[in-house]
Image 1 (cartoon, helix red, strand yellow):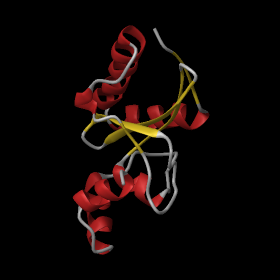
Image 2 (cartoon, rainbow, N blue to C red):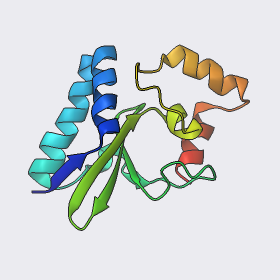
Image 3 (tube, rainbow, N blue to C red):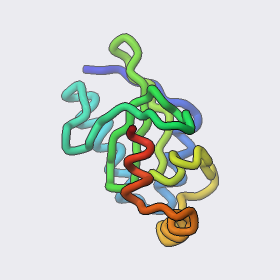
Length: 128
């Protein structure tokens, strides 16, 4: 069994996600309670991997997917997990997080296109 703590950012993020989609928030809780606590890790189906990109936003931290565009950012420290953020790929790419509301997927898609990028490019960039 792994112990974990969470940052204030994480608690704010889970609350904004819960307001947007209670089902998605439940996916995060399932990931933490069932997989992390009971089984001591994140399943491969959640695509756990280290972050590392040119912008440096949370580089060196780990990230996994509770839902296709619901990322859980965390750090493993001597058998202890620090839960840092819950965000979208675009928030992580920009390194800008709105603590008051979950991003609208259509608005994010428009912003990504306006920057001349695709969602696949954004995902690849934050994971490189």
